[in-house]
Length: 122
Length: 106
Image (cartoon, rainbow over all chains, first blue to last red; front, side, top):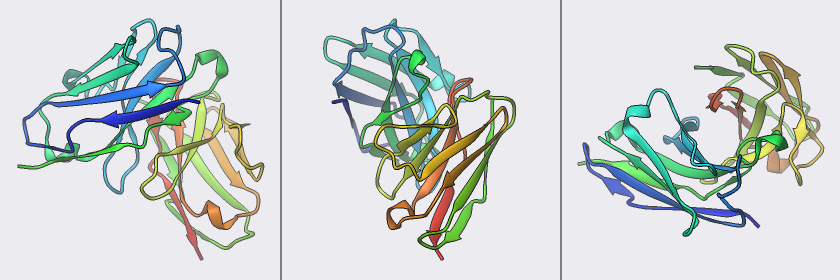
């Protein structure tokens, strides 16, 4: 059974750096083609994909946020970390991590964490 | 970037109704299109992928069609549990979501 859970601060100040951790179980991020992505959703708005890391350590970033994001993995701990710099109130959102199966399955993000609401305010 | 546009933004319907939601892509995504259902306070739930493949455990009243730039999600007979917001998502080039369609009680 695949599970994911996000952890990190729920309140950050403007200009601060946000560090979120996704702890997962039920799959290995050592497998080529398997990935873990981060998606955020501002209150009342649509989800927005941020970043994804594959089992071979290949990384993808949203072009509009690329210069603020860093994604890394620690396979020994079954964790993926997202770092977002220079936080602003418009970054207030629920942040989700999600499992992306191997491409041969033809599917997209199939398992999601419960999400963590991060507020940006002074 | 590939933009995804859904219509309508809100849909009022009754239990038993047949419901169609349309999703258009700004360029071809072939059949790399997924549909999600989201309820308040919950993470999105994958319903269909590759345009028309039903995710395991999803009721067969949900179906999808389309390729290229135009796609449709159909709920064959709306059930009480189906009142929610639906999102399309392309995964041909990175990942982009539509703005959502809220299915509400008529």
